[in-house]
Image 1 (cartoon, helix red, strand yellow):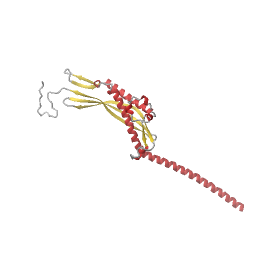
Image 2: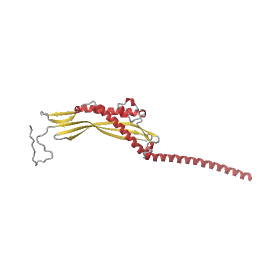
Image 3: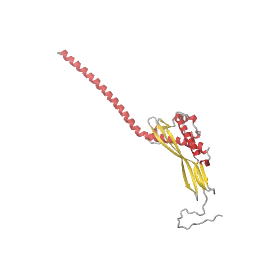
Image 4: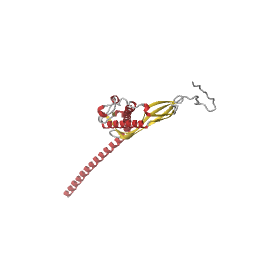
Length: 261
Protein backbone atom coordinates (compact mmCIF):
# COMPACT_ATOMS: atom_id res chain seq x y z
CA UNK A 1 0.00 0.00 0.00
CA UNK A 2 2.81 2.41 0.85
CA UNK A 3 4.54 1.69 -2.45
CA UNK A 4 1.36 2.38 -4.38
CA UNK A 5 0.89 5.59 -2.46
CA UNK A 6 4.46 6.69 -3.25
CA UNK A 7 4.03 5.81 -6.91
CA UNK A 8 0.91 7.93 -7.08
CA UNK A 9 2.79 10.85 -5.50
CA UNK A 10 5.65 10.50 -7.94
CA UNK A 11 3.16 10.31 -10.81
CA UNK A 12 1.37 13.45 -9.60
CA UNK A 13 4.64 15.37 -9.26
CA UNK A 14 5.62 14.41 -12.78
CA UNK A 15 2.25 15.62 -14.05
CA UNK A 16 2.65 18.88 -12.19
CA UNK A 17 6.13 19.39 -13.70
CA UNK A 18 4.79 18.75 -17.18
CA UNK A 19 1.92 21.17 -16.53
CA UNK A 20 4.32 23.87 -15.32
CA UNK A 21 6.58 23.40 -18.35
CA UNK A 22 3.56 23.56 -20.64
CA UNK A 23 2.32 26.74 -18.98
CA UNK A 24 5.77 28.33 -19.28
CA UNK A 25 5.89 27.51 -22.99
CA UNK A 26 2.43 28.96 -23.53
CA UNK A 27 3.33 32.05 -21.53
CA UNK A 28 6.47 32.61 -23.59
CA UNK A 29 4.49 32.23 -26.83
CA UNK A 30 1.82 34.65 -25.58
CA UNK A 31 4.47 37.20 -24.53
CA UNK A 32 6.22 36.94 -27.92
CA UNK A 33 2.92 37.42 -29.77
CA UNK A 34 2.05 40.43 -27.59
CA UNK A 35 5.45 41.99 -28.31
CA UNK A 36 5.03 41.42 -32.07
CA UNK A 37 1.48 42.84 -32.17
CA UNK A 38 2.47 45.79 -29.95
CA UNK A 39 5.46 46.57 -32.17
CA UNK A 40 3.35 46.39 -35.33
CA UNK A 41 0.69 48.63 -33.78
CA UNK A 42 3.27 51.21 -32.67
CA UNK A 43 4.92 51.19 -36.10
CA UNK A 44 1.56 51.61 -37.79
CA UNK A 45 0.65 54.47 -35.46
CA UNK A 46 4.00 56.22 -35.99
CA UNK A 47 3.78 55.66 -39.73
CA UNK A 48 0.33 57.27 -39.91
CA UNK A 49 1.49 60.27 -37.86
CA UNK A 50 5.00 60.79 -39.20
CA UNK A 51 4.68 59.85 -42.86
CA UNK A 52 2.69 62.99 -43.86
CA UNK A 53 5.30 65.25 -42.22
CA UNK A 54 8.25 63.52 -43.88
CA UNK A 55 6.45 63.27 -47.20
CA UNK A 56 5.77 67.03 -47.23
CA UNK A 57 9.52 67.66 -46.95
CA UNK A 58 10.30 65.04 -49.59
CA UNK A 59 7.64 66.41 -51.95
CA UNK A 60 8.96 69.97 -51.56
CA UNK A 61 12.52 68.92 -52.46
CA UNK A 62 11.32 66.82 -55.40
CA UNK A 63 9.37 69.75 -56.83
CA UNK A 64 12.35 72.04 -56.30
CA UNK A 65 14.70 69.77 -58.24
CA UNK A 66 12.12 69.20 -61.00
CA UNK A 67 11.74 72.97 -61.33
CA UNK A 68 15.51 73.35 -61.78
CA UNK A 69 15.53 70.69 -64.52
CA UNK A 70 12.51 72.24 -66.30
CA UNK A 71 13.84 75.82 -66.24
CA UNK A 72 17.26 74.63 -67.43
CA UNK A 73 15.72 72.69 -70.34
CA UNK A 74 13.68 75.70 -71.49
CA UNK A 75 16.60 78.08 -71.08
CA UNK A 76 18.99 75.98 -73.18
CA UNK A 77 16.55 74.80 -75.82
CA UNK A 78 14.38 77.89 -76.26
CA UNK A 79 15.76 81.11 -74.84
CA UNK A 80 19.31 80.62 -76.09
CA UNK A 81 18.64 78.93 -79.43
CA UNK A 82 15.29 80.11 -80.80
CA UNK A 83 14.44 83.46 -82.37
CA UNK A 84 11.13 84.60 -80.91
CA UNK A 85 9.91 85.78 -84.32
CA UNK A 86 10.25 82.21 -85.60
CA UNK A 87 7.38 81.19 -83.33
CA UNK A 88 4.85 83.38 -85.14
CA UNK A 89 3.31 83.35 -88.60
CA UNK A 90 1.86 86.78 -89.37
CA UNK A 91 -0.28 87.42 -92.44
CA UNK A 92 -0.91 90.93 -93.74
CA UNK A 93 -3.23 92.46 -96.32
CA UNK A 94 -2.26 94.68 -99.25
CA UNK A 95 -1.98 97.66 -96.94
CA UNK A 96 0.39 95.73 -94.68
CA UNK A 97 -2.24 95.57 -91.97
CA UNK A 98 -2.11 92.46 -89.77
CA UNK A 99 -4.92 90.08 -90.64
CA UNK A 100 -4.01 87.03 -88.57
CA UNK A 101 -1.27 85.87 -86.25
CA UNK A 102 -0.64 82.20 -85.64
CA UNK A 103 2.11 79.90 -84.43
CA UNK A 104 4.63 78.13 -86.55
CA UNK A 105 3.75 74.44 -85.91
CA UNK A 106 7.15 73.19 -87.07
CA UNK A 107 9.06 75.45 -84.68
CA UNK A 108 6.63 74.79 -81.81
CA UNK A 109 6.84 71.00 -82.19
CA UNK A 110 10.61 71.21 -82.42
CA UNK A 111 10.76 73.19 -79.16
CA UNK A 112 8.37 70.89 -77.30
CA UNK A 113 10.29 67.78 -78.40
CA UNK A 114 13.65 69.20 -77.33
CA UNK A 115 12.38 70.47 -73.99
CA UNK A 116 10.52 67.26 -73.14
CA UNK A 117 13.47 65.02 -74.06
CA UNK A 118 15.88 67.16 -72.07
CA UNK A 119 13.72 67.01 -68.93
CA UNK A 120 13.10 63.29 -69.26
CA UNK A 121 16.77 62.43 -69.79
CA UNK A 122 18.01 64.58 -66.89
CA UNK A 123 15.43 63.21 -64.45
CA UNK A 124 16.39 59.66 -65.44
CA UNK A 125 20.07 60.47 -64.88
CA UNK A 126 19.24 61.83 -61.42
CA UNK A 127 17.19 58.73 -60.65
CA UNK A 128 20.11 56.46 -61.59
CA UNK A 129 22.78 58.62 -59.96
CA UNK A 130 24.57 59.45 -63.24
CA UNK A 131 25.54 62.95 -62.16
CA UNK A 132 28.39 63.25 -64.64
CA UNK A 133 25.91 62.99 -67.56
CA UNK A 134 23.55 65.72 -66.33
CA UNK A 135 23.10 68.65 -68.70
CA UNK A 136 22.82 71.12 -65.83
CA UNK A 137 24.97 74.05 -64.76
CA UNK A 138 27.03 73.52 -61.61
CA UNK A 139 25.39 76.60 -60.07
CA UNK A 140 22.01 74.86 -60.32
CA UNK A 141 23.23 72.01 -58.10
CA UNK A 142 25.18 74.08 -55.58
CA UNK A 143 22.67 73.23 -52.81
CA UNK A 144 22.93 69.47 -53.40
CA UNK A 145 25.37 66.89 -52.06
CA UNK A 146 27.06 65.40 -55.12
CA UNK A 147 27.98 62.19 -53.29
CA UNK A 148 24.31 61.65 -52.43
CA UNK A 149 23.21 62.44 -55.99
CA UNK A 150 25.57 59.73 -57.24
CA UNK A 151 23.58 57.29 -55.08
CA UNK A 152 20.27 58.58 -56.45
CA UNK A 153 19.53 60.44 -53.20
CA UNK A 154 18.25 63.95 -53.85
CA UNK A 155 17.85 64.99 -50.22
CA UNK A 156 18.24 63.74 -46.67
CA UNK A 157 15.62 64.73 -44.10
CA UNK A 158 16.74 64.98 -40.45
CA UNK A 159 14.35 62.82 -38.45
CA UNK A 160 14.12 65.60 -35.85
CA UNK A 161 11.67 67.49 -38.07
CA UNK A 162 8.90 65.17 -36.87
CA UNK A 163 8.88 67.00 -33.52
CA UNK A 164 7.90 70.26 -35.20
CA UNK A 165 10.55 72.19 -33.27
CA UNK A 166 13.21 74.38 -34.89
CA UNK A 167 15.57 73.42 -32.06
CA UNK A 168 15.26 69.70 -32.83
CA UNK A 169 14.86 70.01 -36.60
CA UNK A 170 18.48 69.18 -37.45
CA UNK A 171 19.05 66.27 -35.10
CA UNK A 172 18.55 62.55 -35.46
CA UNK A 173 19.26 60.03 -38.23
CA UNK A 174 18.97 61.26 -41.82
CA UNK A 175 16.17 59.84 -43.95
CA UNK A 176 17.13 59.58 -47.66
CA UNK A 177 14.75 60.73 -50.38
CA UNK A 178 14.80 59.36 -53.92
CA UNK A 179 12.61 60.07 -56.92
CA UNK A 180 11.56 58.23 -60.03
CA UNK A 181 9.88 59.59 -63.16
CA UNK A 182 6.55 57.84 -63.76
CA UNK A 183 5.18 57.70 -67.31
CA UNK A 184 5.70 60.24 -70.06
CA UNK A 185 5.94 64.00 -69.79
CA UNK A 186 3.00 65.87 -71.34
CA UNK A 187 3.88 69.24 -72.87
CA UNK A 188 1.94 71.79 -74.90
CA UNK A 189 1.83 75.48 -75.79
CA UNK A 190 -0.54 77.84 -74.03
CA UNK A 191 -1.15 81.43 -75.16
CA UNK A 192 -2.47 84.53 -73.54
CA UNK A 193 -3.55 87.62 -75.48
CA UNK A 194 -3.95 90.94 -73.65
CA UNK A 195 -5.19 94.24 -75.09
CA UNK A 196 -2.51 96.91 -75.03
CA UNK A 197 -3.44 100.44 -75.93
CA UNK A 198 -5.42 101.18 -79.10
CA UNK A 199 -5.60 98.27 -81.54
CA UNK A 200 -2.51 96.62 -80.06
CA UNK A 201 -2.15 93.31 -78.27
CA UNK A 202 0.48 91.54 -76.20
CA UNK A 203 0.79 87.85 -77.04
CA UNK A 204 2.41 85.69 -74.37
CA UNK A 205 3.51 82.13 -75.10
CA UNK A 206 3.91 79.62 -72.27
CA UNK A 207 5.14 76.06 -72.31
CA UNK A 208 3.01 73.92 -69.99
CA UNK A 209 4.57 70.71 -68.66
CA UNK A 210 2.83 67.99 -66.67
CA UNK A 211 4.74 65.11 -65.17
CA UNK A 212 4.39 62.53 -62.41
CA UNK A 213 7.16 61.59 -59.99
CA UNK A 214 7.38 58.75 -57.51
CA UNK A 215 8.81 60.07 -54.23
CA UNK A 216 10.58 57.22 -52.44
CA UNK A 217 11.26 57.13 -48.69
CA UNK A 218 12.74 54.10 -46.84
CA UNK A 219 9.34 53.06 -45.46
CA UNK A 220 6.83 54.53 -47.90
CA UNK A 221 6.40 55.77 -51.44
CA UNK A 222 3.86 58.01 -53.15
CA UNK A 223 3.25 59.82 -56.42
CA UNK A 224 3.12 63.58 -56.88
CA UNK A 225 1.79 65.52 -59.86
CA UNK A 226 3.94 68.42 -61.04
CA UNK A 227 2.55 71.05 -63.38
CA UNK A 228 4.67 73.95 -64.56
CA UNK A 229 3.88 76.84 -66.88
CA UNK A 230 6.96 78.74 -68.06
CA UNK A 231 6.74 81.87 -70.28
CA UNK A 232 9.07 81.60 -73.28
CA UNK A 233 8.08 84.53 -75.51
CA UNK A 234 6.21 87.82 -75.34
CA UNK A 235 5.43 89.77 -78.50
CA UNK A 236 3.70 93.11 -79.01
CA UNK A 237 1.45 93.00 -82.05
CA UNK A 238 0.75 96.51 -83.34
CA UNK A 239 -2.24 97.33 -85.49
CA UNK A 240 -3.05 100.61 -87.18
CA UNK A 241 -4.62 103.36 -85.11
CA UNK A 242 -8.19 104.01 -86.37
CA UNK A 243 -9.53 107.45 -87.33
CA UNK A 244 -11.76 107.39 -84.26
CA UNK A 245 -11.87 105.35 -81.09
CA UNK A 246 -15.14 104.14 -79.60
CA UNK A 247 -13.99 101.93 -76.77
CA UNK A 248 -16.45 102.38 -73.90
CA UNK A 249 -18.76 104.64 -75.94
CA UNK A 250 -22.17 103.40 -77.02
CA UNK A 251 -23.75 103.94 -80.42
CA UNK A 252 -25.79 106.91 -79.17
CA UNK A 253 -22.68 108.80 -78.09
CA UNK A 254 -21.07 111.36 -80.32
CA UNK A 255 -17.88 110.15 -81.96
CA UNK A 256 -14.68 112.12 -81.97
CA UNK A 257 -12.87 112.17 -85.33
CA UNK A 258 -9.11 112.66 -85.24
CA UNK A 259 -7.47 114.41 -88.20
CA UNK A 260 -4.85 112.41 -90.06
CA UNK A 261 -1.90 114.22 -91.53
